[in-house]
Image 1 (cartoon, rainbow, N blue to C red):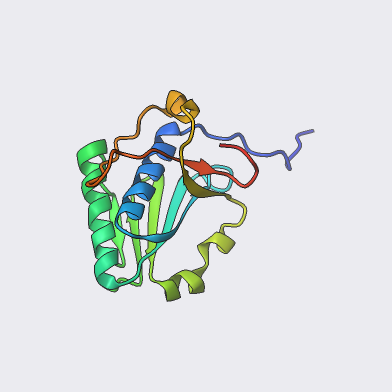
Image 2 (cartoon, rainbow, N blue to C red):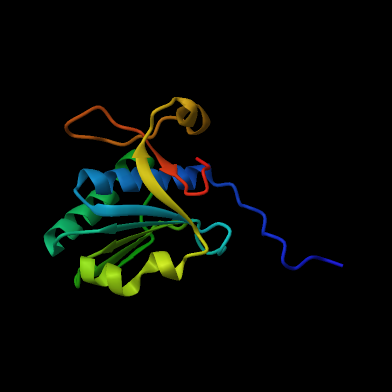
Length: 162
């Protein structure tokens, strides 16, 4: 008899996590707020990570969206598969396949509350790396910074992993 309640096997996708971290870094550099990465690999097979952030204005959300597109194309060679909400600018969705970016204004972020909707996902809070352990596992992240040396980020998972 098969145990149907057994946890699904976790799909490995280190490049997806690196891409999500690179996107989060771009958001941080363009002054996005409340940046989160959700690891959805145990929840759905459609995508692996969400990157969530809040913008302060239509102009700033456009700048964040445009810079993500530029950096991911130039540094990673990836093109977005689709974009929604750019003209309305309350909730911009950038689809990169395994990674989907959600840029919200404050009102839309509170209303849609994706963190609660996807509460079964692992939630990541970003913090600067302090050890070389992450780099030895995942390699350097090609993230540009106009003012400083690129800073490497990692996820701090509430369950203590990462």
